[in-house]
Length: 203
Image 1 (cartoon, rainbow, N blue to C red):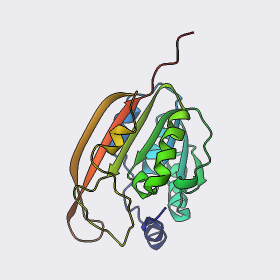
Image 2: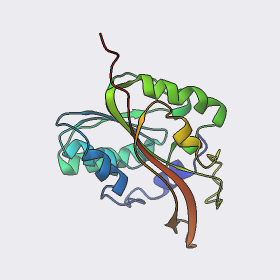
Image 3: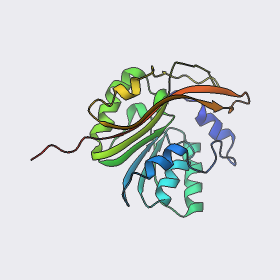
């Protein structure tokens, strides 16, 4: 991965850059899950969504390449008295162990090179239970703002949805989001999707 956030997490050990409350996407995805679901959080950052899923009673595996981010996540999990399995790994070389009820990623998969993504999405889908869920948000190239020198392989509009042919699309949206993490108010264009895996084949 080619994200600058590992450096930022290490630079701010006492501050949660993204806060500690869950993202709206995490809340929406959690409402779809049965109790005790198995959740994979890809690019978990400082762990706010991972801890939220765990606090809701789910079994969570949280993956990020940034040790300082995982340290923050562990600290937040201890404070909330929940258990999360933290895994230090690059999403481009992910050691998958299925099957998951939810594969979730809030703003991370666009750091994976497009050539690798062609294989990653089928692998993630294969690691999902029938009728399980994927919830993802990625940056697209409709509006590009380079933040903190990051290197992103931007999705083209509609590319994320195209990766889910054969899945039931619960929600798909392309929009602009506001950001000011580098001190300058700006926007990013994103594609956001929640989709359900197909039912198992009839016997």
